[in-house]
Amino acid sequence: MNVKNATAKEVMLKRVRQALLQKNDNPHPNFKETALYHDEDELVDLVFVRELTAAGGKFLYCDGEIGLIENLISLTEVNSIKNIYAWEQGIQNLLSPYGFPFLKTEKDFELANASITSCEALIARNGSVMVSNANASGRRLSIYPPIHIVVAKASQLVWDLKDALAYMQKRYGQEIPTMISTITGPSRTADIEKRLVLGAHGPKELYVLLLEDRF
Image (cartoon, rainbow, N blue to C red; front, top):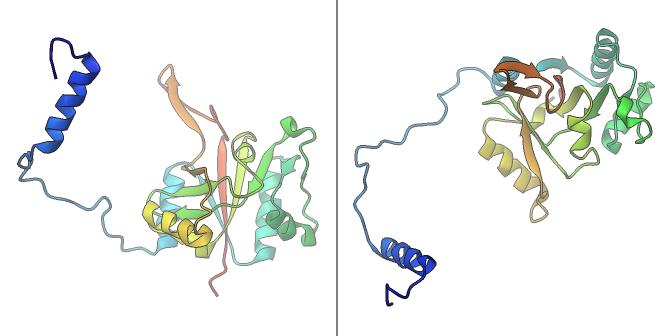
């Protein structure tokens, strides 16, 4: 290649090819790989609760469906929730037999006080909730109402993000959802005058109701 006639792009690509062909010694020979997380002495569910609450989330344990309904009634009374939305058929089937009131259409959605959704997994190491676009709630129901209530099963608890992704792969196979995200506590930002503000880009409160299903 004539360097004088070569374009800047061609010169750059030539340098990249040369760099790829060169075998350099490890620039950091003393580097040692260390575990991202330290070993835990507590059970996975206790670690999740600890990290969830540290991130500002709230946790409620439910030993069965009746316990779940009782916790939901208490939660709606304490927070004066009037319009609570549930779009997923599975959540509706869980609530309907007990007469728990919810809205399931988009009519007056802007008046929603809270939403109830399921999730894909609960990640213990950082207290996060993994969600995807595979269910009917979509992204809007989990970020628009000021209170987001997640109903999860104890069997969905995993240790790390890699475990959650493996869980997703096992569940969906080749039909993996196109949008996978994690929620860690309520929405927050410190960009406004360097003050921590909750609910700036999503819910001000996040509740995780864990339904026991391991027995």
